Length: 66
Image (tube, rainbow, N blue to C red; front, side, top):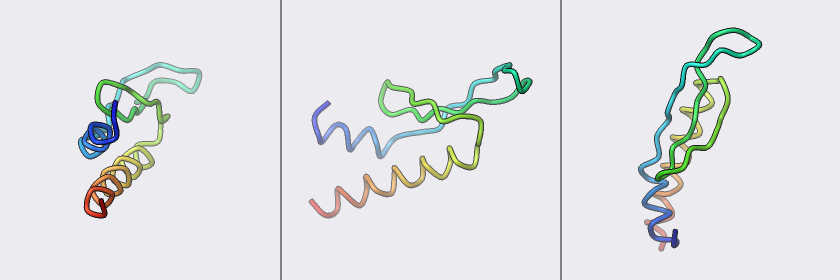
């Protein structure tokens, strides 16, 4: 990915959840989807949503300062 398409992908990132059964029991596992890539974030929904918000906001700000 070049810099322009990466920034576009970051602006469109989203949180994806998957139901899993782990040693701690059943629950959701969260991923950040950037383009076609998934980045594992763990089981904390608030962290996943906050990170997604921050990534989008930073990508939008980066575009405004170019």
